[in-house]
Length: 74
Image 1 (cartoon, helix red, strand yellow):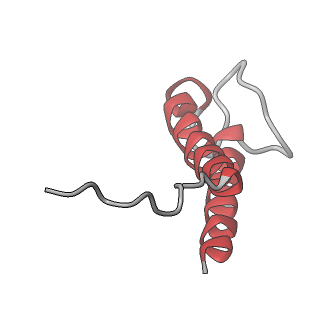
Image 2 (cartoon, one colour):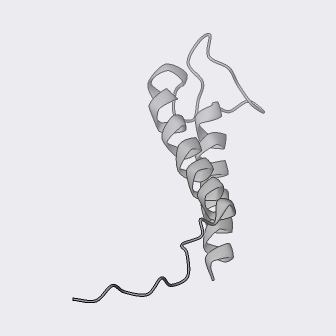
Image 3 (cartoon, helix red, strand yellow):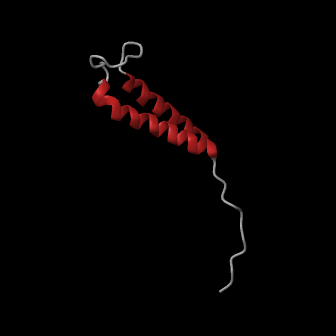
């Protein structure tokens, strides 16, 4: 057996990593907080953003960031 000559080193694309982690993280965090904050209508004592539960905004922000990730991929 012969050693394989060294090829190009693998380079980590930091932008892709950040976009995918942020998008998925926001969406998952929104889903996890839905029990305490409510899905659309905020539960009593829960925070509100423009009169709606933050869960909606977190999931939408996650979807937008994932769309940006796919645009960056293409």
